[in-house]
Figure 1 (cartoon, rainbow, N blue to C red):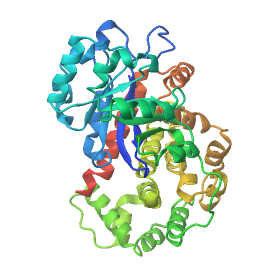
Figure 2: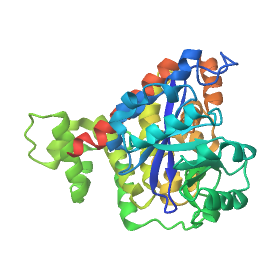
Figure 3: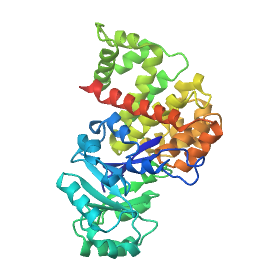
Figure 4: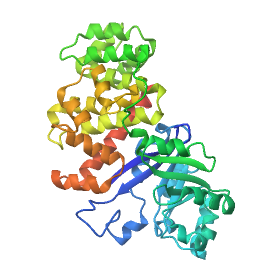
Length: 410
């Protein structure tokens, strides 16, 4: 099993929904089958346990979750599987559904029970023959590369004004900027928010400079705990976060000072904590998904390090994951951004030139988060690794994220 959550943004780059993307098996080892390994699999909702593991509360507040449902699974007991998320689930159907009484009645039932419905991958030429189904939809998901949005939006505005249009497969910021202020479009999906920044202001704010200086202290080969603790002590927000972390891992310890808290964590854990928390703080003026992407990449890479023969470099690949969005955080090219922090030549080679021993795991994680299952499947064959190993690592990652950034804050 392979599964991930893909963000959908509103016009202000705030995450409003996540789409569940999954694949049951390695598609290259089972060429005729993409997403299901048997007819029985069509009745299942693949990857739903990821949503259960991470919990909706760990996603952006108020976000919906778009869950693909096959034309067979729509008649299964969806209610029991999705009841926990009732009111925030959008059930997404594709062109395989049929415009007949069975489907229409089932859709009406789901709507009455509080579920939102969406149509995806329905060819334009089939809109008219499926108009009764479309009238029951809350959302329609359109691929901006496959339809003429200027014409389709007029059609939906006239025929189905209740439907919110979601535009997917947006490659770059320019396309997003051309669509975001159009009132006919509601949500936006694509890799545009992850594209490296190569132009714009190169000035870094004083607050970010202070954070980068602390990062550089702890990323020295053998930094002093006391020096790091003294710098942390100058920032109230960091002190609060440090104490939360120490109280979480050392319940019975009496913390007497910032230096004592740093000593409890130790050099290795303090370094990891500082890099993680400061990266989150550096993302404060960026879309909220940027920080989440950074954290998930870092932990996922750390979990996958043994799979890629990098078990001895797990700390380094964790740091690489955190810094893989540094260009977006600092609004400059990755090459320039990495000059602001202390990183190894291997991390620089991977993030700037896509070369070296760390490039493979970086490429894999980026493909995975984008649900590029064909590329992921290809790499798994090369690595001779099964999908379950990867899925377990991803599950561990999202559970860590939930514990690190939500359970420690209550």
